[in-house]
Image 1 (cartoon, rainbow, N blue to C red):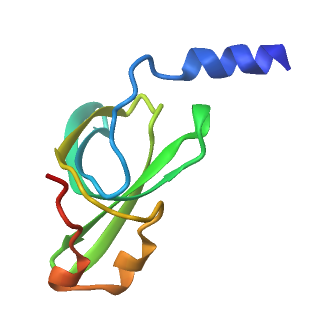
Image 2 (image 1 turned 120 degrees about the horizontal axis):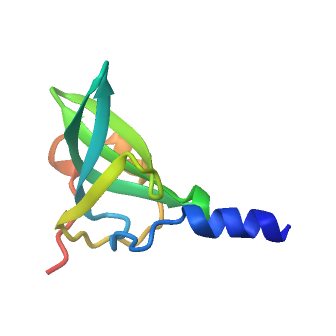
Length: 113
Protein backbone atom coordinates (compact mmCIF):
# COMPACT_ATOMS: atom_id res chain seq x y z
CA UNK A 1 0.00 0.00 0.00
CA UNK A 2 2.87 2.36 0.75
CA UNK A 3 4.31 1.71 -2.73
CA UNK A 4 1.04 2.86 -4.30
CA UNK A 5 1.08 6.04 -2.22
CA UNK A 6 4.64 6.78 -3.34
CA UNK A 7 3.71 6.31 -7.00
CA UNK A 8 0.66 8.53 -6.58
CA UNK A 9 2.66 11.29 -4.90
CA UNK A 10 5.34 11.22 -7.60
CA UNK A 11 2.83 11.59 -10.45
CA UNK A 12 0.95 14.58 -8.98
CA UNK A 13 1.91 17.94 -10.48
CA UNK A 14 3.77 20.30 -8.16
CA UNK A 15 1.60 23.34 -8.84
CA UNK A 16 -2.06 22.75 -9.55
CA UNK A 17 -4.04 25.35 -11.48
CA UNK A 18 -6.42 27.30 -9.25
CA UNK A 19 -9.94 27.45 -10.72
CA UNK A 20 -13.46 26.53 -9.69
CA UNK A 21 -16.65 25.28 -11.28
CA UNK A 22 -18.28 28.08 -13.29
CA UNK A 23 -15.02 29.70 -14.35
CA UNK A 24 -14.21 30.19 -18.02
CA UNK A 25 -10.79 28.67 -18.63
CA UNK A 26 -8.37 28.26 -21.51
CA UNK A 27 -6.68 24.83 -21.49
CA UNK A 28 -3.49 24.43 -23.55
CA UNK A 29 -3.21 20.79 -24.61
CA UNK A 30 -0.31 19.13 -26.42
CA UNK A 31 -1.50 17.31 -29.55
CA UNK A 32 0.67 14.74 -31.34
CA UNK A 33 0.17 14.43 -35.10
CA UNK A 34 2.57 11.89 -36.49
CA UNK A 35 6.04 13.03 -35.44
CA UNK A 36 5.04 16.63 -34.81
CA UNK A 37 3.58 18.10 -31.65
CA UNK A 38 1.63 21.30 -31.26
CA UNK A 39 -0.27 23.17 -28.57
CA UNK A 40 -4.04 23.47 -29.04
CA UNK A 41 -6.18 25.78 -26.90
CA UNK A 42 -9.64 24.74 -25.71
CA UNK A 43 -11.65 27.51 -24.06
CA UNK A 44 -14.93 27.00 -22.25
CA UNK A 45 -16.81 26.87 -18.96
CA UNK A 46 -15.81 24.40 -16.24
CA UNK A 47 -18.98 22.41 -15.50
CA UNK A 48 -17.53 19.76 -13.16
CA UNK A 49 -14.53 18.77 -11.09
CA UNK A 50 -14.16 15.16 -9.97
CA UNK A 51 -12.16 13.03 -7.56
CA UNK A 52 -8.89 14.17 -6.07
CA UNK A 53 -5.26 13.20 -5.99
CA UNK A 54 -3.91 11.44 -9.08
CA UNK A 55 -7.26 10.80 -10.77
CA UNK A 56 -8.54 14.39 -10.49
CA UNK A 57 -10.34 15.58 -13.63
CA UNK A 58 -12.33 18.57 -14.77
CA UNK A 59 -14.88 18.93 -17.57
CA UNK A 60 -14.91 21.96 -19.87
CA UNK A 61 -17.90 22.80 -22.10
CA UNK A 62 -18.09 25.18 -25.03
CA UNK A 63 -20.45 25.87 -27.91
CA UNK A 64 -18.95 25.73 -31.41
CA UNK A 65 -21.13 26.35 -34.49
CA UNK A 66 -24.27 25.70 -32.43
CA UNK A 67 -23.06 22.33 -31.13
CA UNK A 68 -22.04 21.71 -27.52
CA UNK A 69 -18.58 20.21 -27.05
CA UNK A 70 -17.34 18.81 -23.75
CA UNK A 71 -13.86 17.58 -22.96
CA UNK A 72 -12.64 15.93 -19.80
CA UNK A 73 -9.07 16.80 -18.82
CA UNK A 74 -6.98 15.06 -16.15
CA UNK A 75 -5.28 17.75 -14.08
CA UNK A 76 -2.11 15.70 -13.64
CA UNK A 77 -1.74 14.76 -17.30
CA UNK A 78 1.57 15.69 -18.94
CA UNK A 79 -0.39 16.70 -22.06
CA UNK A 80 -2.21 19.50 -20.21
CA UNK A 81 0.43 22.21 -20.39
CA UNK A 82 -1.36 25.21 -18.91
CA UNK A 83 -4.76 26.20 -17.54
CA UNK A 84 -5.50 29.92 -17.43
CA UNK A 85 -8.62 31.48 -15.96
CA UNK A 86 -10.22 33.87 -18.47
CA UNK A 87 -13.22 34.85 -16.34
CA UNK A 88 -14.46 33.98 -12.86
CA UNK A 89 -18.01 32.68 -12.60
CA UNK A 90 -20.55 32.95 -9.81
CA UNK A 91 -22.46 29.69 -9.33
CA UNK A 92 -24.29 27.93 -6.52
CA UNK A 93 -23.81 24.34 -7.66
CA UNK A 94 -20.92 21.90 -7.68
CA UNK A 95 -21.93 20.45 -11.06
CA UNK A 96 -23.38 22.57 -13.87
CA UNK A 97 -24.90 19.78 -15.95
CA UNK A 98 -28.07 21.84 -16.35
CA UNK A 99 -26.20 23.98 -18.92
CA UNK A 100 -26.43 21.08 -21.37
CA UNK A 101 -30.13 21.73 -21.87
CA UNK A 102 -29.76 25.46 -22.40
CA UNK A 103 -28.92 27.42 -25.52
CA UNK A 104 -27.97 31.00 -26.30
CA UNK A 105 -27.78 33.52 -23.47
CA UNK A 106 -29.47 31.10 -21.05
CA UNK A 107 -26.33 28.93 -21.16
CA UNK A 108 -24.16 31.72 -19.76
CA UNK A 109 -22.80 31.82 -16.21
CA UNK A 110 -22.92 35.07 -14.23
CA UNK A 111 -19.61 36.84 -13.80
CA UNK A 112 -18.10 37.12 -10.33
CA UNK A 113 -16.76 40.65 -9.94
